[in-house]
Amino acid sequence: MAAWALYRLPHADRYVRIRQTSGEPEALLSCSQLNGREGFVVAPFDIRPDQTVLLIRPDAVEAYPLSGSPGISGKSEKSGISSPSPSYAVDFANFHAQLLSGTFRKIVLARCADETTAEPVSPEELFLRACQRYPRMFIALVYTSQTGYWLTATPEILLDNEGQQWRTIALAGTMKLEADQLQGEGETVTWSTKNIQEQRYVATYITECLERFVCDFHEEGPRTVRAANLVHLRSDFTFMLPDTDHLGDLLQTLHPTPAVCGLPKQDAFRFITHNEHTPRRYYSGFMGPIGPSTHLYVSLRCMNIEGSRYHLYAGGGLLKDSILEQEWLETEAKLETMRSLLY
Image (cartoon, rainbow, N blue to C red; front, side, top):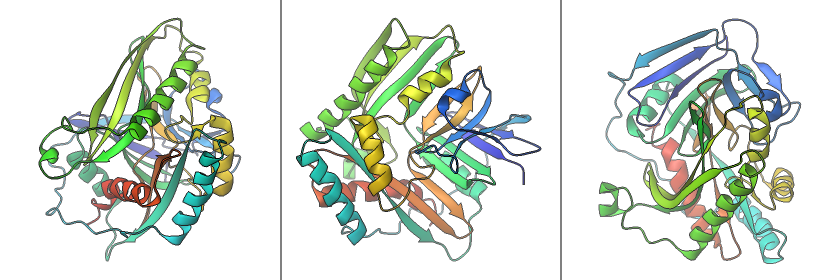
């Protein structure tokens, strides 16, 4: 089966299919190798020889209307585990100890939860369900022989353009909407100091990255934005980028952002890859089309699909004052974005 991807931009009324009709996607060992390239990118959190950045060649590009997408029967949800698993508790204690000792200012802890259904739900149907349920988010479904099927519904832009004007965002902090709050966009949410501080760390890092590549940029925010039944704090950065020949170099600097890694970034990255119980694989990497029209998003709220078995991924940023049970519940709320599509 040739490599392909489906994607739908936030609030769009159509989705796009990109197909590579022969051969395997090009395997790249760094984001910098995306300089001057075109296609659909699937990048892992940890780029290694056995887990590369993949570039799907756009041999065929087709757009389809979303009208007639399959509905989702009812609003049934399968409840997740309400108390932390032993492996998550061990990881939390290990990660949190590094924060208390001052090794990191922030570090992100992720986990994977497996779900099964009595009968397989086709990946394409899950994609269309996600498009219908999550109009505010970037939805993508990718298949390659190297990765298998990955579905994401993510609110986090890594790099996006409209002509020569480009945009990236600092997205961090999470709260779950409850009761009457679900009728709005999170206007009544009051943010904790922990969430505000976490988002500021990410915004400061992105500022430092952009200063290396552009002369001038504009930051707006932070503001509250909704993603499914969660809200986050978001700052938008806009800038002009007349020369896109070094777009891969900018991606190399940005990825992974502190929103999915930590600070100091390289030290946090090494700690995560050596200490998390479950390898992240393509969760918290990024995906999307690159070229004249670039829409790259961080791969959050992911699932890897294997027949009737689904591997769901989620994570959360830890600071010194983080509490185990609260962080677990945050990951449960994030997992529900994908979990609710299955039942």
